Image 1 (tube, rainbow, N blue to C red):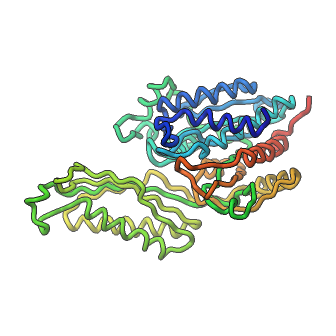
Image 2 (cartoon, rainbow, N blue to C red):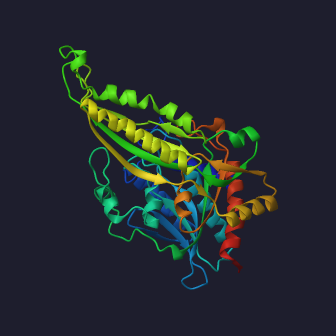
Image 3 (cartoon, rainbow, N blue to C red):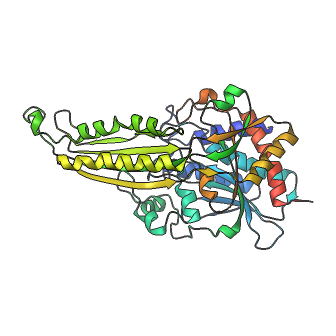
Length: 410
């Protein structure tokens, strides 16, 4: 098989590890599907001659040792979890590209001075434990051991319990010394329409949008739908709906590409003839600049807490806050240089989605590239990117990795 065919096969293979066959990829962190995908990735790492280990978060590493003793590694990778009923490319495409870079090192018998490490990260999406970017945040220490252990899924299962269920060891070290990381490269699908509309196969990411997430709980009073007068109600769903309906206006006021999304809503007791007494909902806030995010957080918290005066009990938690991040200038230049040398058309692009790359940018030099998404779609079963574009990404990262690891030909 050629490179394109190998990529297509691995995308298809990983897509089989889903709890929703025929309805997209649902691969939640520490699930049985996670375990199956994990074993597949480790088998590929073994096939390509890498030394495999997992950390106390469940991140997977495949290492090609370098000739320099105790030298920092060049990391390449992405995440392998998914949103519910998502696609086959968001995350796994970047893991597969990284694996294929390692395969090229093996095929060409290259010995690096600095180690090359392929990394497959967990819980980037936050679909099971909330917040997102858990694998990378745990690695750099912005998610503490205590906070990690406190996290639970919607069924009350803790991270530690979930890890134990699939045979992972949560007591292994989680935080990684930044001095052991020389640089980090990540390929991701664009998840937007720009590259496809421009008919350009590669986007070199210059900056990643800032984002935060809020988890809001509003508690009112349950009551009979037929016997409780309208002026005697403390309806948690009505309060939540009134609050959420004001979010678009808040985003528009701030400009700077500010967006606000409520993607998860949980109503209790969820009965057709019962006044809702409790509503939990998420708030996702993103902007290209930090000030609009801070402004929106303050306005939303003020709006939500104003309902306390009407007899509601309110709780607002902020499990994630990430500032807008610029990619390392030298890494951006390197990726553009390698694209030009290979004759691959590219353009500069900014990311409207959060990625593990933004977390690593706090501790090391980071470079990131996008490939086009068909119709700009993502987080849905229709998500698709051309394996030929992914193969171009492999070649760019291969050349970049040779420079960064300072390979020695055998």
